[in-house]
Length: 478
Image (cartoon, rainbow, N blue to C red; front, side, top):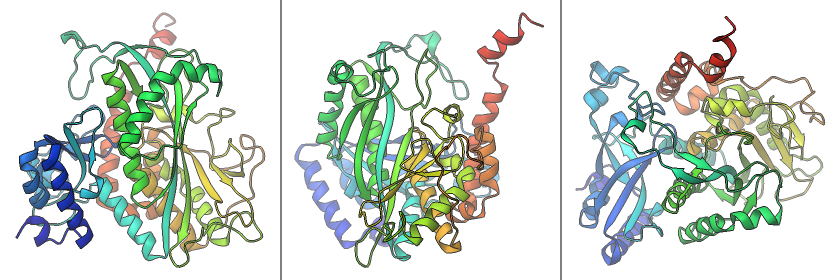
């Protein structure tokens, strides 16, 4: 009996899908990339030859536990060679192996590397227990909990990012770094000067890049809606239609990785960093459009008959507001992302909502009786782990529903209305997360504590570094 059969890890439909995928691999695929999203939403994994695919599909493939314990410099934060791997889990001592099991429903052939198949994987201990730090599995559990409550999570993606011309990849030996101190970043130049928002002239300048992205995303069966010129230099936006359950998070993780790989192959660099340190650039956001679908009748549970939002929609909205500070650790998980929270900038700076108002954190779009009424969360950054960002919305919204919370009146002047401020930095968000019972319960205390330590290590390294600002400000003055 295989590992998958012994631990009943696939439904009959998934087993049938696995057989079909193996036939496709045998037909024309030479290697398969097995990927998992780490805590930061960065894909890690192993590439196996096609001949190993049947065994991997049945029994999984081994994967080191340490790869879930790294900060963004790829430095392992925990002392994995101490007892319990550094945080009391014997199965993780010594960098022991996990088993990553391919999800056949995610199989793709990579159009820019057509000899390559690709699958997302789920992580298990060797005894078949789900790995509590695996972000995709955490999100799946939250989606299932929401469905057990009678609702499906529906989410659409609106993602801003930058695309640059790659001038120098910085691959000289002197450019390299080490875990805890990344190497020198690539040197780039702009594709547009920016500040001609949605003009056709700027679109045509970007058309070669847009076509690279459009054709490759289409070949991946990613449902692209639009390609848009954003406000700042070399800044673009892609949008994707609403999808249910796992699909929007899986789509985001594949899109982000595909965009970076395709651009790099053709001499460009795609960056989902919120605010790159280049002159005159604008911050990028990830606006998440969301609603709940009633599983009994398929209707939008946010649509109000008389009011803009139904009673359930108002409770959900209030939950997002009530937990906004703690959820920021997931919606805005980088130190850089908090540079975006500033007034009068089309980005939020406080936990507030409004009717079709782009200055608020939560923009409610729709009307009484409108079947597509939904909430747009504008707090997120494009570097966020999609499983944690989307999962945080489910946890916070459900808590608002359970407690029957009510939101304050909508804001017409979002940067002047009195409301709780969003965290000023990552440290403030991590402190709020530590004290948030709903998010600790929803994600699990083991995961939250581990996540806080990993992000805290990232923050500690930043605070020890001497910035250019400090050098300019103090060196000659004092």
